[in-house]
Image (tube, rainbow, N blue to C red; front, top):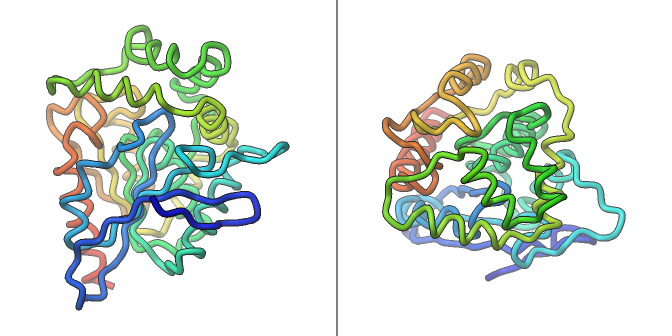
Length: 273
């Protein structure tokens, strides 16, 4: 996988897929993973997206080959936003479509608020919002620090009541892959969102980037349909798509449908700009 120097402390690993027509000036979509998620979280999106968009899947600081943070590094949302901006700068990407799942969406909200000129669209999937401070899932941070990744994943699915899929084999694959997350990076990534003190209503109201919110009707651990509807009402140029009957993480439960919605939204916004 390619790796690019982002700053003096970080080389970021990423995947790149491009099956667009070579004579076209195609746009780029960046797919950002959440915390405690499989390394190949977006695998099912690539065939749909990569025919019309250049697809980049970066791995955040400390994850799967990207440089671990140096001693004294502070895991803050501001620093994560800076990492993403520097990543886009290093690749020479002036403006992209940004997709973030869960914590990746939290990063996306904060990026869109701070650097709206760098985004064509923002898509958030199963995202609890621009902060996890006080969110019901913030208890995972204490579990990670005390029990590590594997036991926290077990807690998430068996004790906390994380919804499961009715797709044969998906739960087992997801759990096995999620347990491969690096502990220090998982703790840092989550702590950046849990410790962020921000006025949610004010931040969302001031996001000017066209925003697409995706979730499933029966998946409520991270965000309920009611909460997603409230977010849509706050963001000036937002659209909400809810997938009926989906009771697990939409990114892996209905990857083609998610990718189709992102592609439709991207095409609509590009055509109107």
